[in-house]
Length: 373
Image 1 (cartoon, rainbow, N blue to C red):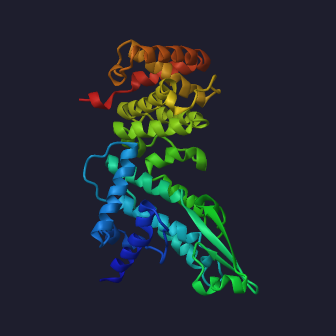
Image 2 (image 1 turned 90 degrees about the vertical axis):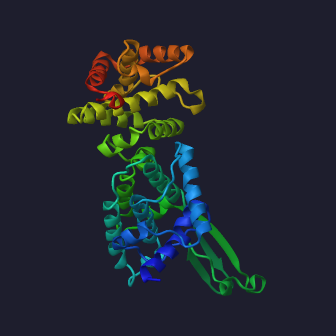
Image 3 (image 1 turned 135 degrees about the vertical axis):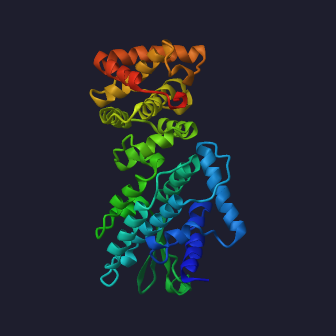
């Protein structure tokens, strides 16, 4: 077995599998971007563990949107896993020492190389698996332990105390204190390299994650082509719409309006514009008709970008009412349609006629990609 493959096996067993199957994920040596080709074709040698990993990924993906095809981790997911591993390494206090500190910029450089190697996702599975890996990692916590006895105090960061330190607790007056620190807190504690910035760069390669994490990490995502291609898949778009409405749009409404305004100025093409409008319209529709979401639309939009966001629903409703190209996308029961009509009238009044006409002009420029010749 080559040294690179042995490193892959340890990485898969100690980091990737616990990340998705549960347990303690551990880091070892920094992973070089040069290893990506080998790692992207590797699978855990234990077939049972490999099958369990795939089953876990499929289960998590299907929680967001149906994935019915066979799934094999692609180069983008492998690079995401490797970058996450190295980001965790950068938060290890063992590196924050005089003789080890010089390794940190080198590890950060490898993260940059891995992020740059992540391609635009090409399928529903590649979009969702990438998001799940990031979501699981950012939700992780490091367990730190302080051990005190009659003579000494020991600190173990993310590692279990060795048996000799905790032996004979009654005789040596051994006491243990445990604390958990989330990944966000760990990143904030690193000064040598910009770990949080590297993490944001990784998130930007996951179109689904960037919008889900926008409020939490103060990101300003845009309607780039990679994102619009990803949400042109109806399952991905529906999963993202549900996720965003369930967690509450809040300030994201203004971000959505700004993204739509910028996209309009870039003149991306009628099909890309249509996907963006469809996404925004579906967000507002779900806010109105799905009481299970537990969120309420704002009573009155703010000025500027949030006005444009708000004007999308009345403009969409007008196109549906007049039998425009959006009509076949929305099939609502009479009661829901009535509520949408009422909400559209309310938003048109509060957003203002200028915002409504701007949104209306966007629908006139857009072209449904499913109807393109």
